Length: 88
Image (cartoon, rainbow, N blue to C red; front, side, top):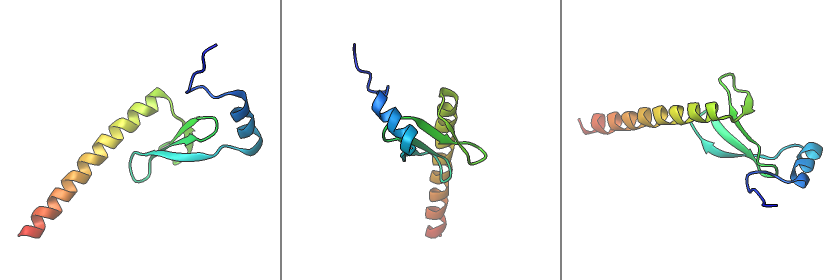
């Protein structure tokens, strides 16, 4: 039987069911949207539109990628404006 690195074993699942998950931020999409992963069982969550934590599905993964791209463009335009306004 092969071990899948993305599939947690019995012990990490049991640890999380007894003591709770230990979520760590794995990706900052925007200032208020982040992706989290449990360090024990590798369960992935993200922030919803209401601010709640929800499971990271392929749909939400795609939404987060689009949000990140829009956020980066907006930040780069803002930086560009501050540079050009400081020159004049």
